[in-house]
Length: 170
Image (cartoon, rainbow, N blue to C red; front, top):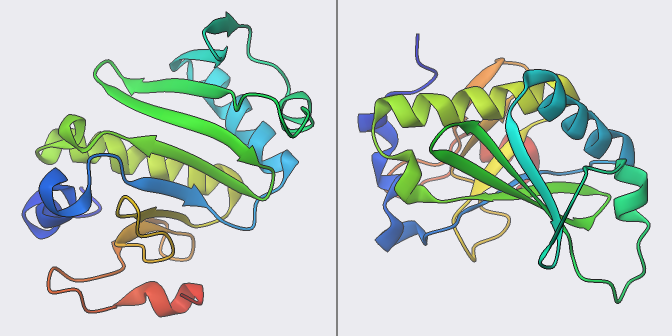
């Protein structure tokens, strides 16, 4: 059974309203959480590609990536949880796991279910919420994985009213 129905969330996946690349994040993270995500990607066998600038490299340990010099280029990890669904993890800081998704790849119930499954896998592995904010509107999640409910839930309604977001101190 789907966590949420496409008809109930499709307004949050309209690139014209939400921006093309919403921000997905796990707040209050650690280097260990980043490593758990890297281990999850490897364990699930998801196709991935780690790069620093234009250079493709083997996936390093999280500690090595997150301890690079402050002026170093920010590396990214591209992960395909399904053939045509891409998440791009950016190693900006140890205290927040963050990644982007392209809303054009998440249209319809089947694609949305892949996205929900991906959020669930990360949230369950870390035991933490995974939140999706509209592009450029950080701190105002519209949906996310709820640890206690063990599923992806709406955190805002289509009219912009806050629902469960208050439970995350937002």
